[in-house]
Length: 248
Image (cartoon, rainbow, N blue to C red; front, side, top):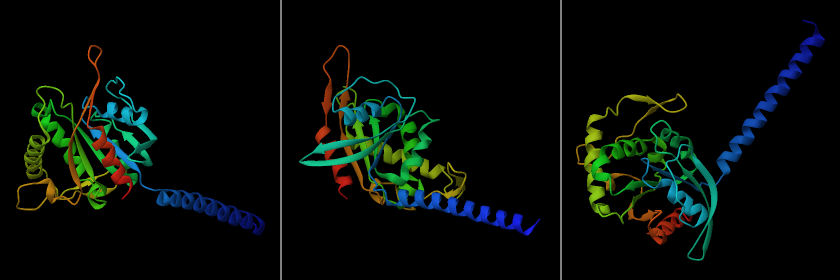
């Protein structure tokens, strides 16, 4: 290799390194400086997640169907003389899609976990399994992300109240904790190793109060039907909770 060729190669390599550094530095600064205003809307299929997301987006109750794609949009929220922007992410409850919630945790300031209170007596194990995955996520634990349990469809006759739902989930999460091997290393979505956190206090029955996260239970109804008037209950409390997280 001649001196000229060596100089050309050296300059080209230096320019390449500089460009790579510039691009990654800009992306890092953009990501690190971005205000956290993300809200994940999670839960099993048909719990009412997309209906709630659409209500925030359009301020009206729209008929929806089971989602097969992520609804991801920044919306403007107005309540109590306050005006804020919130990034709402509705993750489908399909078991193959819902693990993608972890990708949004770095911008997440709150999680809305939606429960069909008319079916929880039947599907409590599936609800608790998904909830367990969320609660033992490192970022959820370390960032102490607040979690709102939206006990939805309370207008349905066989639905149960939020206190009963809390008791059911605490008992089922304790069972899951006792059967899970939290000491094993697990891979995250990027292929990196991560250690699951231990849920609650060792040697004690599990209670949500043992978590570092702010936990809130709320009852709502977002129901649409072709032969009945829409039912909307609990919107003011829901808006208030979202606003409080944005003001933190």
